[in-house]
Amino acid sequence: MNRISRWMATILAATTALAIVAGVSPARSSAENTPSTDWSVAVVESTMARYTPSTIGGWSYPVGLYLYGQYLVYQRTHNARYLSYIKSWVDRFVDASGNINQSFDSLDSMMAGRLLVIMYEETGQARYRTAAAKIRKRLTTYPRTSDGGFWHATASSRAHQLWADGAFMLNPFLAEYGREFGDSAYTNDETTKQLLVYGTHLQVANGLLQHAYDESKTQSWADPRTGLAPEQWCRAIGWYAMATVNILDIVPATQPRRAQLLTILGNLAAGMERYQDPATGRWFQVVNKGTRAGNWTETSCSSMFSYTLSRAAQQGYIDPHYTAVAQRGYQGVLGKISLGSDGRTNLTDISIGTNVGDYAYYIARTKATNDFHGLGAFLIMSEQFRGR
Image (tube, rainbow, N blue to C red; front, side, top):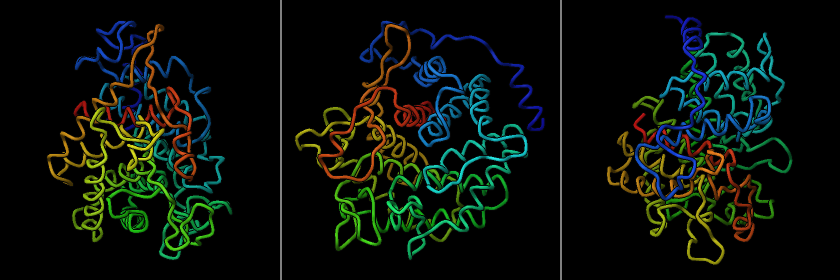
């Protein structure tokens, strides 16, 4: 069956059932989670009930992250409504000729490009390939640090900077683009180079990553000697960690930088284990300072860390004992999800979008409920633990 036929068959098989998840009543709290609870389906159904593809938000990485998570749930459940919803959102931005009205002047703006590759793979429609190619072509002129790392954004306020966040915003899309469209010779080289450059600058002795690096050393947050940001912000580390696992899953065993990336990932995993909160299994907003006043366990990064450790152990990238560390993290995150009186999921304690700052800045970030950073990370983690 070709892609278009598969797409049509899937649409014809669509169900209109709106049940959130079998066997869970609206009154059930997070403390009553059971193995039979399909929290992935519950989150997707709740989010689709709250938003249409037109109201969920514009072209952005948080929405793109959530919808990527929804796609993972579609791959498992084959519920065509989930894929149709994603397609409707993507089609708001891509016209019949493949034009997409985005300048791609930041790595953040490229993350949702992952959905373009997915839509081409699912439908075979050339317009999605055309749109995705715009990001690929943008990289030929996109500015870099002297050692080849892509700047976080082209704006003067982001010039010469590498943020750990950016590792996820570009690299999984780029590797998947190369695999789908026969460009892997470039994309496997570029993605591993980016992760190595970022990791070399940002990783420090405890295995974790500082949030950002300023090659020019002119930013107010930059250490005048190293150019590094002062803190180890949890979600930035999670972005880099997930990206590294994604790329290791794609590039061949013979890729020359693979061994270096495995070393970075191994050190990162050790740091995650060292700073996991023993009381909750989650991780703190400023990861290495859990005992300091005001710090709090954050849900999106705890999902990202749990996913990373589980997947990396499963794939043999890190020691098998990290599976247990990941499981504690997963259970800790489940403590933050529950069903409201309306029968819809609520995922709490998610840090809103965050720039580079000091300790006081990070711990003062709003603790949001159902923020897309958290919903997307939760779905990626949840699907990993459901044995995808």
